[in-house]
Structures are given as C-alpha cells and as structure tokens.
Image (cartoon, rainbow, N blue to C red; front, side):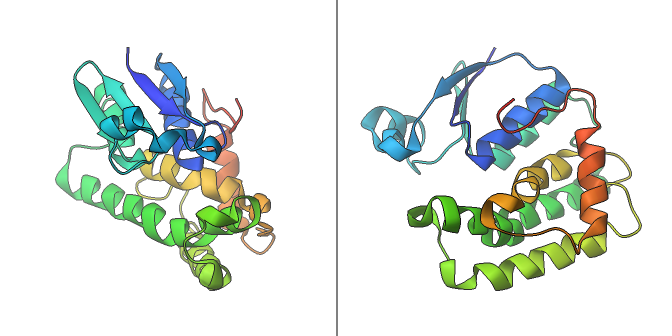
Length: 198
C-alpha cells in the first residue's frame, strides 16, 4: 500500500484520489498543508525538491507530479484501459495529459487560484484569455466523442476533470460549453466516482 502526500482542495491531488477511487485502490493519505508552508519543510523537500503536491511513496519509490502518479497507478492497478500500452493510443493519451498540464493549468486551474489563492496564481493577467482557449479546445474535442483521448475513459479524462469541474470556483461559467458539461456528467457516472471532498 502506498502513501499519498495530499491536500484535499488541491486539484492535482484530487486527480490522484479520483483515479484511486475509480480503480478501488487502497492507499494511505498523509496531509500536507500548503497554506501553512508544510511543502517547504526540509522533510517534505527531501521527498520532492520541487516543493509540490502530490507525492506518492511506495517503499523506496517516490513519485512527484500528478500526471506521473496517474500513469503509475493506472499501469499498476488499472490494466491497459486507463493508460494504454499500444504506442499510438499511448501517444494520444499523453498528448491530452500535456494539454491538462498546460492549457488547463494556465486557464481554468489558474482562474480558480486567482480567486481563492491569488499568491499561487502564476499568470493572473492572462487567465481569462487562457481559460477561453482551453475551454474552446476541449469543447471542440468533445463535440463528437464521449471521452477525451480514446473511445473509453483514460487518465486524460481524470487529469482534465478536476479543474473543469471546479470552474465555478474561479467564476468561470460552462454555460456555453455543452459538450464539456455532457462529458463531466459521464465522468461523474463512472463507478467509483468521488467528488473533490469525497
């Protein structure tokens, strides 16, 4: 059983908890309070010198970065559905993981930070433009398909869901994005789905 260093309201931590819930994976949570600076303590920095959450520890293995953790969990516990091994499918999933790490991160993710945790927002001046672009890209992708990368849910869906589902926290409306809203309903209907606070 692995340990997840985690903060409940952190979207990158929620990604990992969501995948674990969907896969029925048991693990131990160790809380880290970002607001109190616990991610900058010597003990935490020994695990992750980037000072970021989440971190997964499994015996001697320490994995930082939410998407690296998603891939590891999917490969270890989820078979090939959540992270395929066929090279073409894997490339498609990785491409949408990158979009979650860049377009969504600089858009809806940062819109939430700008409102709730402004000192953590890396590009406050560009949030509206970046959010509009990210939402357009995902709306277009989901116009004629049920899932983001493949014809079934993958870690690409799990990586994108938290920031899109929490858009309201950043005063971002999804009213004009029906394909995204339909996709969110599909994610929420998956067996094992859990919300950000469980």
